[in-house]
Image (cartoon, rainbow, N blue to C red; front, side):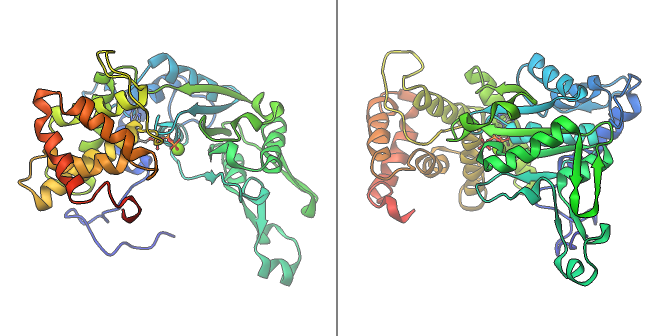
Length: 382
Ligand SMILES: Nc1ncnc2c1ncn2[C@@H]1O[C@H](COP(=O)(O)OP(=O)(O)OP(=O)(O)O)[C@@H](O)[C@H]1O
Ligand SMILES: [Mg+2]
């Protein structure tokens, strides 16, 4: 049972900080299900076509507008959805902040109506997280019994024919990854203690995500790798695409934070995106100046938080309009992650690039002001 939140929205329903995809987009999912006359694979709530429409957005015959969740290549999304309609699992691979988790959640919501069957991969994830555990009080009192068994999210997905999600697959130890192999190849989970097993219902599949920057990605056994179709999520191809992603996501997040219902000014978004892309690429947009890259990834996800943070500052402590002084602090915080090397990278960029751009004088000033306030001098403090 979910605990009742203390706060309620004006409509009377609880104001969740972050509703699951299937809650946030329940209306769109219902409209798609009603309009969807195509064939659905066993246990799927929607046809593959409707799942792709849910992810990429579109307009239905009844006039319902479906918002775009993922902004990027249609083919790539189609391949991901088609994979899930076969008996192969899906591995979403890519740099940090390329929407792997985001896409996985929305795929599970659209296909199974439930994105909550998640195993979080860490070095400490045990096999129980993939198989099952026990309620020890009952186990001691009654011995092994079905009632004492605590199913893992994977086991629950198998019994209901749903999508199980495995986050950060390559951070899990080899023995946990191996436990997945049996599940994915045999579609069966043995329970020796009860002399029984769970057989997967049609519709069961796994979506895993992995970060290609993580050490460990190459250690995934070839046996496990063979069970997955891999889809690599790219960084946004162009500045315009990245500006669009940031603008849309900030507007959505802003609504949930009850910020004024206004999209962020596109010029400010473009500035942050350009800075991130230039530092990421190690060269300015015009190709003239080579730059040092900071240790941080500077992903789209971080651009989203710099703008959201700036909007919050502008709303509560500024004139309500996002300006250079609202984004400067967030920018510095995003770029400077390693206090020994990153301040040098940032200063070179500030003096060598930002200062020379005539229309960026306000940003240069705001960053210098922060520096004078000691933002670069005491990196350990932030
Ligand atoms: N192409 C895109 N379309 C829509 N949203 C995007 C896109 N790229 C990034 N985002 C946004 O970036 C944010 C972060 O994405 P997410 O957390 O899924 O990244 P990730 O790839 O799982 O990163 P990590 O490797 O750090 O786990 C999300 O809010 C998502 O909406
Ligand atoms: Mg992720």
